[in-house]
Image (cartoon, protein in one colour):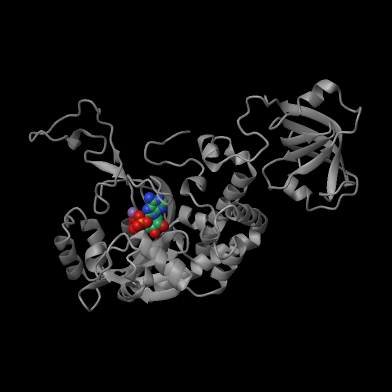
Length: 478
Ligand code: ATP
Ligand code: MN
């Protein structure tokens, strides 16, 4: 049998008593013709493999280059050297795959994140990205665990949709029509009747509308899947393809919605700290070193571990949009004209405003509620004041918006009026309106961008570094 190997992570948690073990992995380093640092991706920690002098031929030793893959069988013994508790004394050593160190792009030195992004196909083998993507996995697992434990139904909403209710202009078209010479209708436009689905279709920007159909049958559902936005915003917080978590709950009002979102974020950070502390500590160390090189005013006030503990142990601040605008108008930043964009009631807050509230004023995550209805979507419930809607955004330090949600408009007549006012096609969304026609209920939900959450937990600063293969304007490599 080939695969009787022990994973290095498991092995490092056992007691070394001279037992025979088989390990496989990639060479991280080889020094003094004796000591191999071996990594198999199960953990950031390497296993030390000792090749006793004279036990292997020179030709084999020469092939122990960075990233060569090997199989080792030997004795697991307490280490004589400092720096590790145990080591494997190699009995047999087999090279599984050579790696030409002269051309292997990832050298055993510190590479910039930009360089590694260009080599994203190999960056998983670095300590930083190994840690980031193991944390990503832990967080994904925690998402499912949280909702499953609460009895939510995991719902798969469609990736190809025909509804252009939301985000017009931000959508990627899906078509099988020839790009160079599509069939035309009588008006000279593209004839989508000839297209694969017989109509114009696109990649989903959100699973929410379908999610509401699930919530008004199962009570509580969540989605967790890929989402696509052709927004040409080349920022460190936007991807063209990202993963979104969208719970939708019947019998919830705005406050229930906020409580759930806060509990959810607390839970999954705590879960990651409990189940993958090692990788997060490594990333905290990395961030501390990175920040040490910055001028003092650019450094974070808290280290990553401290920040995560703080967030888990403190309630989020909750303020209304109106209060938020007042705080901004009273702020020294506003008075000293430090904001690039103007502040007044009715604006869609810019990221500089959000960051001021979160990083300077409250110094913790903030939930902003009851936004002006003119800047929010048609499905958000209109408040009694007639001016605002029962929306809530959660803003996080260093990230900005991490969650966007609302109580949904459950009153058919109000909803139809809103759709008309906002030029949302009522006929096309008749299926959606059926939830309001047949046993409508108060309900609410939110969307959380998975990569923004990973940024928060890992302390990484560019969203391209927390998704394996980022899709951004002018980039669809790998
Ligand atoms: P932003 O103002 O930051 O563009 P948004 O208002 O467009 O966000 P929503 O439509 O409310 O965001 O989407 C819900 C969540 O999805 C956001 O809170 C955010 O966490 C995430 N998100 C939105 N757009 C992107 C994107 N392009 N890349 C990654 N995550 C995103
Ligand atoms: Mn956006």
